Image 1 (cartoon, rainbow, N blue to C red):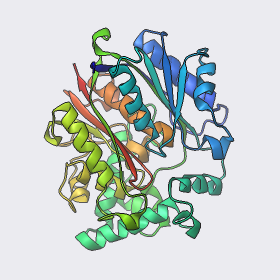
Image 2 (image 1 turned 90 degrees about the horizontal axis):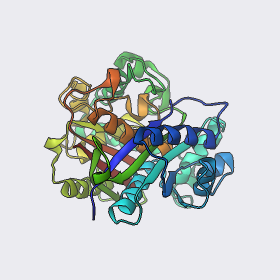
Image 3 (image 1 turned 135 degrees about the horizontal axis):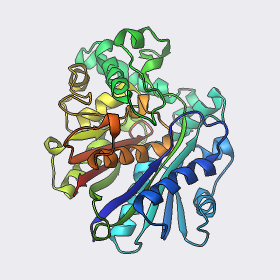
Length: 380
């Protein structure tokens, strides 16, 4: 297996793109990534998306995006793994280059959530859970997060304000991010005063609806000067139902993917200089910190509340705002994270730069922890 590098990245601002469709957003980010990589010689494409079928009535996104880029004829594959789709697509792209099957792979994610009414969007998002056993009850993804959030506070005697501090940190880090959807500070008082989304989760503790696309170009490391090496990549799953898990406050898919990625990269959590973790709700950000190995179980909320996750903190986390403040265009989210880590390691993060960063980790989650992709990038 040959080493793989990120040769170029491209992304769009996360917002409600009323005048742009899936093809427009994907092509914009892809052209930026190819320009950044200094090549147009793409031999295969992977496209991550979650809601194209229910919201746009659109399938065949692989062939669609190949055609949009004028690359009809090459291999093009659509990938769906809910909000983990971007990370899973990246994993597949890395394998294609590492194996020698492909020499220049374009991996992108795209999502258009603003095309649907709120009820349509949340019903579509519920497709990440089992339709016969879970979704039929009417519980939303946010409702399931609320069950986990409540149990976490009860078991570990954690105050809601401490969990909310994860959102405070993400918003603090989003300030200065040119592609963030919500690049403003938010105090814990403001978050706790926002309307209740699903008790005990407040509106400002969860990601909003946004559109966007993010793309990376992957090549053999020997062909890339000054690139970012893919040190580790792994995907893992957990029991699909919360009731089937050994502990609903432990994300075994996250632990499994992280363990494999650390092993592949030959590193440990202590070697990470920065993180991009899945915080579509504050409780998911907290659990992610714990199950990736950066905080003891029950201490993730305190880790954020103590200021360790801000850009100037002990472990800069979600340095462009994360899902909460940068935005969460579902199928594209994992690739936004990877683009952001690559930008940080290359010293191209602008006002969001973490000085001296050499190794970074990106983690994205599908459903309520049923799928996880972990990527470790290293500056070479």
